Structure formats: structure tokens, C-alpha cells
Image 1 (cartoon, rainbow, N blue to C red):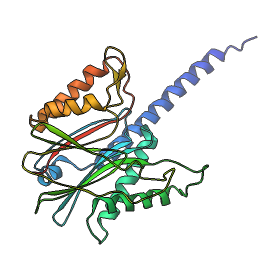
Image 2 (cartoon, one colour; image 1 turned 135 degrees about the horizontal axis):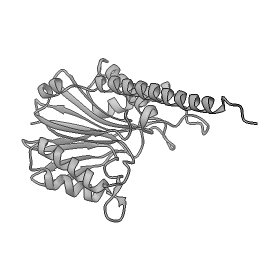
Image 3 (tube, rainbow, N blue to C red; image 1 turned 180 degrees about the vertical axis):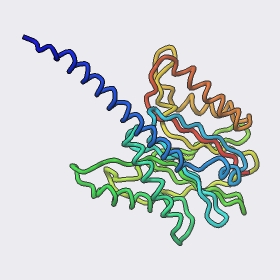
Length: 273
């Protein structure tokens, strides 16, 4: 025989679940506020950069993709990071990455893109107790990082799995990354490469995660892919960067359609001069 209060207990249980969900959602929303506070604000970026846009669309409330800007002496440092996972685990990694980058920027030594990634990798591996054994934590981050010197117009680039796109006069050149993450690597932890290029006025630099290219959508529900992504950036590169952001956003919405967003999205366009 079912007790008379069974329905009340079931109803109470549903109410408790709803309350727990609301508390969890409130905590994640608060975490999002903290994460957003860590990102550089527009006032700082307007002073630091000639022109820029940042398209950042978390898949969940908080994001494993993050962007970073700093300046040391005359140098301007910019980075786009993509941490393992998304949501809360990815967000925790992104906050750790930002904290480590701030530590590195406060160190004495040459301002070199590859050196920054090498030092960041050391800190990530130490924090996650990574030594290369099979049964240990394999979390890591992909990153594209640039160092710009306004005194001579030279840009350094170092990449961990993520490329840099450089567009000049509607011609896109890809600077490829090292095929290893910021974290433990399956083969070996070699030094990251330090690429250099000379910028001129109106050159556009694009840093990004893999979220845009990996988004499913279109008439056949396929990935967007990097080939069309390059063509899209080349086509819009002549517009001002605010317009480019709007065009990218429109393209992403149209492509995604009714499909779910599969990953965090981060695309940054920068004119340093």
C-alpha cells in the first residue's frame, strides 16, 4: 500500500532538485562574472591596440577559450588560448593559464614569444603534476601568441597547435604552429618555434581557437572547416574590424542554424598599425 504522503515526498524532491539546479546555475553565473573580470576591458585594449575585434562565444556559461593581452616596455603581447574541455573544467584551466601568463610577464628576461610559451608549459605541467606517464592528467591548452614591437613593426609568433593568419592586401598567409600543446606532449617537450614577420600599415592578424572551423551546420550538417574559414577572413579583411566581427557573427549564426554549438568560439582580429 502506497503511503498517503508519497506524493508530497515526490513533489518535495522535485522542488529540491529545482532549488539545487537554481543554486548551481547561480554559482556558474557568478563564475562567469569572475572569468569576464579577468579578461582585459575595452578601455585598456583601446589604449593598447590600433584596431581590434574579439568574437568570444562560450558554448556554456563559462568558457575554456580565453584571450590575453599585456604590454612590457614597448612590447605588446596578445594570445588566444583553447583549454582542454569547455564549461567549468575549461574555465578553471583558462583562469590558471591567465594567472601563469601574468607571472611570466612579471619576470625579467627577453620578451620572446617562444620563451613565453615554454615557460607557460613548464608551469602547466608542474601545476597538473604531469611527467609523461600514461595514467596521469593529460589536460593542456592550445595557444597562438604574438609579441609586437611598435618601434620596428616586427611581430613574433609562437603557436601550440593553433596557427596565425596574416592578411595583407586581401592575401592570407598562414604561419603554422608547432604540433604540440601547452602541457604534456605524447612525444617530447621540444622548444616552441619563434616565427618573425614584418608588419606594415593595415596588415590584419587573426588569432583563433578551433571552435569556428569545427562548428557543424550548413545544408549537410558538416563542419565549417579551415579552408572556408580562411576564405571568409580573406573576403572580409578589407572592412573595418567592427564590421568584420558582425560579419563573422552573422556567418556563424547562419551556418549553425538549428544545430547545437559544439565548442567555445574565439576569433580575434588585430591591426597593430
